Amino acid sequence: MNKIVILVVATLTISFSVKAQEEGKVIDKVIAVIGSNVILKSDLESQIVSMRAQGVLIDDNARCELLEELLFQKLLLHQASIDSVTVSESEVEGEIDRRMNYFIAQIGSEKKLEQYYKKSILEIKEEFRTIVKEQMVSQRMQGQITSSVKVTPKEVKTYFNELNKDSVPLIESEVEYAQILINSHENEAEKQEAKDKINGFRERIIGGEDFSTLAILYSEDEGSAKNGGELGFLGRAELVPEFSVIAFKLKNEAVSDVIETEFGYHIMQLIERRGQKVNVRHILVKVKIGAEQIEKAKVLADSIYNLLETDTLTFEQLAEKYSDDDKTKKSRGLVVNSQTGTSLFDIDQVNPQVFYTIDKMSPGEIYKPVPAQSQDGKKGYRIIKLITKTAPHKAAFDTDYAKIQNAALASKQSDETKKWILGKINQTYIKLDESYNTCKFQNTWVK
Picture 1: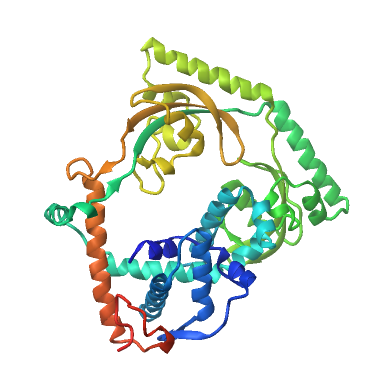
Picture 2: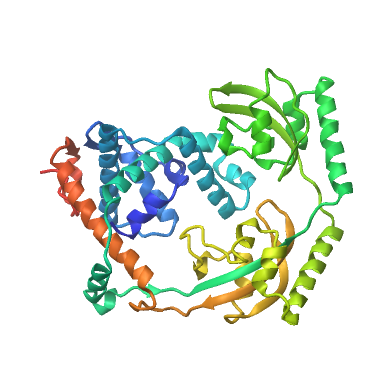
């Protein structure tokens, strides 16, 4: 409906209740009823506090806009219950994990996030499970409303021609790039050292020492160590395959054999199993990769870069042959934007490690190997090829058709949603606190 609304729908603002409570301004009072769903004053105030924390100025108009978005969400929830629109617990868990990973990346680490909110990761996840589930159900319901909406090329052209000059969108700088990623790999001695260490912990537990205590003291999984290694209830798809197979085979409180995954070496112990979910505690020992292995990755990356000067193999062929990045080597090095599914990135979407390299490159240029580090801490080197780079500009129909098409589709979907809201308002019991009668809503919620 507007930029503020999009922000509210798109993010899990963990600061909702926490920040509002810290300010002491949350007052529980029903301010609206939509079918069997209620909106509390604390719901609205928490949203406002969260938006202010993001630097958004909230005046009376913005307050009304936020309330209208809450009304819309509750209307979607009401209709979803009638139409039996649901989401599974595994979907909710996956979405919580995705959003938690985003916030952890923003704040720096799981430990910092827990320190900030004075709660464990498990407690934070549980507190916001209902919020995430309601958002997902609402989004699924909204998706059904607009699922059949399409735009023809003629409609896209008409939409663009009817925009006044001030409304033509500004297209930010975009880049398209490819990479060859060379990771450092542990040697046998480093792997054996980690194996010996985890086996030592296993023997101590079998000998009578407490699993939880050793996890707190020695596990290298920061997120679970402080909870005695406990992971919480997870489904098979939420665990890496090697770990999942053993977790669902464990019985009683037996300690597993050593398990190797992409993260290192683990031992685990069953806490409880409920249907298709299992709660285990584990200890992780990561393989420490020494400077020698990192140097080997650099030497290999330099060798590959030097091959580009021979004209024997192209960048794309070398990426397919040598890159350790499974996501890009099959596309001959081309990096895909996970948010859009295309190879184009807005400049602010580019991995910061990559940005500082491509910022000084020209299209077609291949840059010498630069240090790289994956999310799990694995170090290596990457060779980057800048394919395209555009300057910020006003959208043009021929060159920016895809973006204009998306805008035209969004406009048509918005019109369809407004029609749906109007129809459902007339069929649904709605009551709104009189103190909000002065709000100039886009829809007439109470007649």
